[in-house]
Amino acid sequence: MHELDLTRRNPLIDPSLQIWGWETSVYLFLGGIVAGMMIISGYFLFRGRYRETESTSTILPFLSLVLLSTGMLALFLDLEYKVHVWRMYATFQVTSPMSWGSWILILVYPALFLNMLVRQPHWIETRIPLFERWSALLHRHPVGMKTVGIVNMLLGGMLGIYTGVLLSAFGARPLWNSPVLGFLFLVSGLSSAAAFVHLFARNRWERELLAKSDNAFLTIELFVLALFVIGLITSTRAHQDAALLLLSGVYAPVFWVFVIGVGILVPLFLQTLAVTHRIAHSAIPPVLVIVGGLILRFVIVAAGQVSHWTRVAGLP
Amino acid sequence: MARYGMVIDTTKCVGCMDCVVACKTENDVPEGYNRDWIAYDARGTYPTLHMEIRSERCNHCDNPPCVYCCPCGASHVHDRGGVVLVHHEKCSGCKACIAACPYDARFIHPEGYADKCTFCIHRVEQGLPPACVAVCPTRCMSFGDLDDPASGVSRLLQARRNHPLTPEAGTKPQIFYLT
Image (cartoon, chains in turn yellow, brown):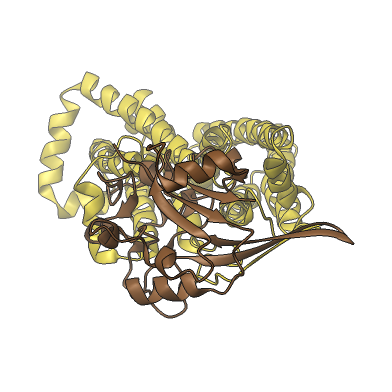
């Protein structure tokens, strides 16, 4: 028997950590999906898809800017000392993943903006003539445009990995303390992004490509999730307890039903039928993938805060 | 250079919470919040049970993850004695330091910044012991320089069996409990 009773009752800390709520989960999800969209739009730009009238290149960078800003708003809402938000940009702390993330986000904005200039949404084109002049300048340098595509892919990769590394750097929370988490969030971001873009892609080639890539990302995500769990199970007792939170603890129903079932297996099955032309493409698989990606962030953020070196609540 | 630490004799601690009250009074800790607290740790199988009563707080780790993860440079190691402190005016309240602490020793002050035990550095700089140590009625708490072999805390650690909290987290805590 081991019973530990503390007289401490600090808000958000006891009985288990609840410092990060929906804001952080939403931010990590939107950060991940934007990372995936940057990689996809960067690839489309590199391949010269912006020349196609029906290409999603027209809207992808702009949508990424909107989603990223929404994520940043969620992050801002999570801060307890909001008027000090600028403090993050008054320094660069090389050992802090959050500091790296803050500065990566600062680089992401101009990269997305340049990507947007290549093929602006019509309503921006007609309203802001200055952008049209910049866009013309960009079009005179094809190598520059390809470079913008590569930079978008690179920064997208960094952003996607960062959303996982942000959590995995916390050794105090055994569930998060996995080297696989960065890659898991990157792949999950890619699958959610491919699903999201698939929802409004009109070009047949792009739809097929996105559905096939989404299947590949979902398959990889499933393997990475397995690696994530195996890594925890084969580690210390604290890490094993953390894994049990997902496998058989209070978060197990949500993890198995919504993350694995609804978020990966069902859309993977339906989309495999769609790409082999047995059923028509529909919005159902992409929506399920997006919902699964969002719930994955919620589960990992919540269960990670419960996981602890010495005491874990919610285990059977 | 000094390395401040604390040695707490669990065979003398009765869990009276004088240290908790002294800390709240000395540091004006808001109602409902604690910089230090009492842990009742019971182990064994009836009738062979053992209870350790501990006065706990920030361990002022030698390898402080709360300092490493801070994006604003607010969490820092003080020049004097390696004490881990927070510059309130630099803190954005991102809570990364709270997530990084395996002892859950930090909290968000109602004014928005991360807060925690300071080892009463304002008293220590005047040659006084931390408030919790000063008031302990059983004299179970000792504070001093762990790098000085002649200090009271070093002599206690040499003479008595002791353990830090959660050493497996790898943060090198600087509070030791005599058993």
